[in-house]
Amino acid sequence: MNVTPTSRTALSGAPFAEVVRTTIMPRMGWKLSGSETLKVPLAKLSVRMATSMQLDDVATRWADLHEDFERAAQGLPPRAVVRREHLPAAAAATLGAIRDTLARLWQEVRWERRHFETLWRLAIDAVPLPGNSHMPLARREAPCGCCGQHGHGGAVAGAHAAAAPTPRQHHFWDCAVAKAVVAQINAHNPGPAPISQAQLWLVQAPPGFQQCVWDVVVMAALAATEHGWVRLRGTTRAAAALGIQTAAAAAPEAAVAGAVEAEPDLDKIPPTQLTPPQPCVNPVELACARAVANFWSRLMQFAQLGVPQKGWDGVDATHPILAVVNGDMLCALPQAMELEA
Image: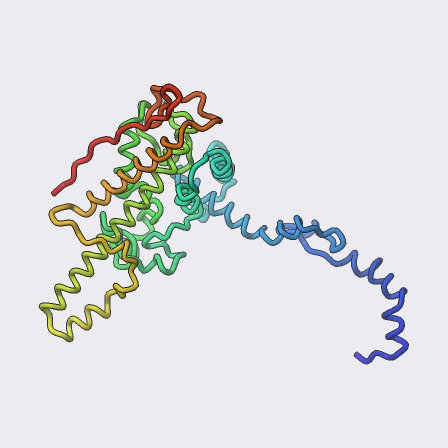
């Protein structure tokens, strides 16, 4: 566009500035997500509004992931199958509470934040589990060492995948490692029935447990479960590495080259996950024992911190798992386990 000297004067003068202020600026702004009528004018934009709009899509995505988590914990159908408004009223009313639960745990539980991580990531399906299609690296992992399900080369594939449990469901409830940790809780459970998946995943205290104690038990249990199956994965990787080395000593060079090419690069596996297989010990039972030991280790570490100043008034000497005796916090003893040879 050609601008004449006269127009330059007009653009830089007060009349044009007045037009911008009174006519153009009031019409500039941002539409709020999900609404065609609500707008934020440019002149009224604040840092708080801008941050909220920037994170709005993230918050919406997290809310959907939290709902998926709550549905899975309660055995409800996924959002893709049944919309929320089509659920029974009682079931729909239970959805949406996990966000407040996570916020409460963050504010009230005084514990090292590493104990919170598994629950936080589990609630948005961000744990790198074998078979997770939305996580490319985890998608190529070897199948679960306890049953061969999920992961690259696992038994769950093709037409059977629709009926199989999700990786999150399997590793944190159905797997032998998860069951071993849950069995430790049930061994000290004073209630008439075993704990449910919803009580564990959604941090809902079962009968006989104070909520403050159950908060700690849940985070310790989920973190210990992750620790157990990570160790199991390391054992199975180490066994695979040992198998490759044995084949290299016995097979022809060409066959060995093909076998090595088909396997992942063992040099890229973290050393902490390459645990040599223990002789005469079932690797699954060993992983279960490691998970159980990690569970009680976390609880004992919490007990050593002393009784929190707030929220623990209802915990007495008879409380299961964590009890308060003469002003000191005591941790229960683990239930005995036997390893299969």
